[in-house]
Length: 110
Image 1 (cartoon, one colour):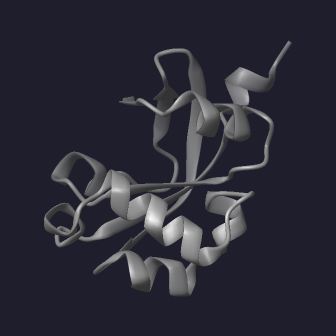
Image 2 (cartoon, rainbow, N blue to C red):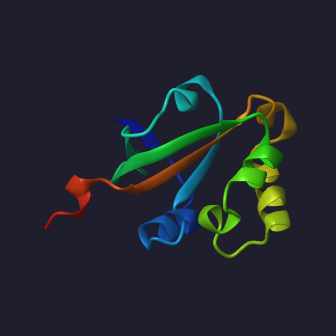
């Protein structure tokens, strides 16, 4: 199980079901992730990857992914600017990964 650390504002959106796609740079440990893999968000919240898609750069990712699933309250232009603040061009050159996620079945049981 891979642990991902997510800023609080984005984690709240994920937990509320508003943000369903997490974007990361394609570091080797991220690029290996695939559908069915489990994630532990911020060390507490179990999620499952439904789909993992790799793109050569952020523009390609945004051309193929729904921006509202990544950042519900940002326009496409604002999202690109925000992602580039997090991932400068030298990191973006590694590629970008979109992870479609949902709560893991174990996490939804009561």
